Image (cartoon, helix red, strand yellow):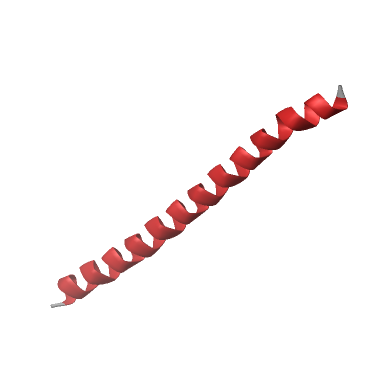
Length: 47
């Protein structure tokens, strides 16, 4: 019984970890891109 439970839960944990990592990288990329665009916008406004 316990063996089956472990076999079932491990893939779920693994998938959740992968999802959270990809979410994290997407958020980081979005933040970097956003700050970059913000700087570009600020520079164009000043000119």
